Length: 101
Image 1 (spheres, rainbow, N blue to C red):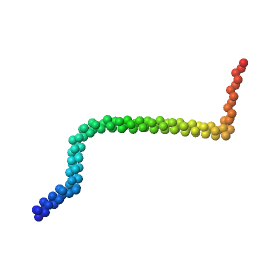
Image 2: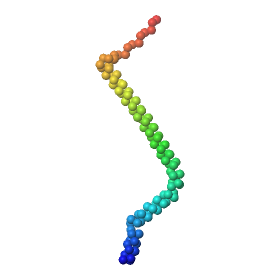
Image 3: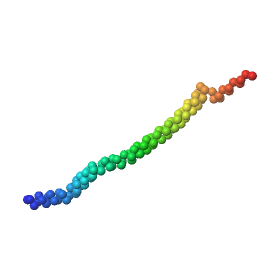
Image 4: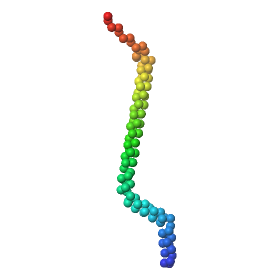
């Protein structure tokens, strides 16, 4: 029986799960050791990514404002034409009065 336990332990240590566990522990330890350097190096990258995202947001906001203004113009023109068709507004603009001489 002791021989079988030793063989079982060897089989367990050489199994795929044991290697995966060992690699995970090693990666975690390496990550803990390298974390300060990674954090310091990644901060400028993170700031530039955030700045880029903010710039994209600003451009999108400006584009949407232009689109909104264009749509407001179309709506105003449609309302004006509708009022003209209904007779609420004259189709011919009034002529300015002539100044007295």
